[in-house]
Length: 260
Image (cartoon, rainbow, N blue to C red):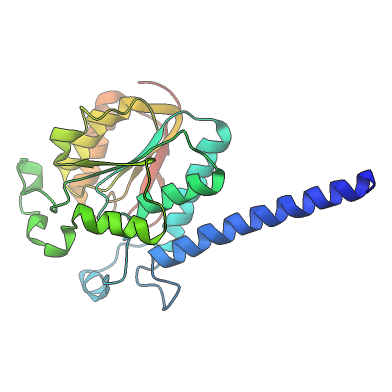
């Protein structure tokens, strides 16, 4: 076999592997968002939906309350930190049915990365009752479908064949679990805690562990005003000036460019 043929075969199989990896991730995204069997439920919209639109969403078959576009944005951030060698694990605080964490573990799998952990932090009993004045009236603890058990989340991981030692669970209220979690560094910090309190607890406990070049993602920034308030208050206190970039009507992120 001549040299040119060897080069051709190498390129062919490299491209095929890359295409196969992308197809696998696309399939995972479609399954998590339930767009593989029927039309998208959570649309790729840029404006905040009305209450009527929110109530019309059927979330029965969803494992993630994010659009396909939102998962693609997450994929791009994961790719950036891996390819750039940004040190640290991945975490989501407030995982619901586990969809974002499942996708992060799937990404590590196709990259062949075995030295990072996906941390899944949740009470596994729903949202806490408001204890901060900023959260007054946000009685999300009364919404039964927000309470997803640890077993249900683990079963969801198992359905994708992704439950292993690279997935670790932090069970309990954020104020009790995040500060003492055995996490050294983070490349991805994803917040989905709804409340002012939950947002502030997560940022206070974990932001300093985010490596320069890593990402902070806020899921409820555009959906719940007090979540955005907590973000702005924290950023002001820490003099964080990295620009906040929208992903869609609810999700924003910033890339950490320096220690503060």
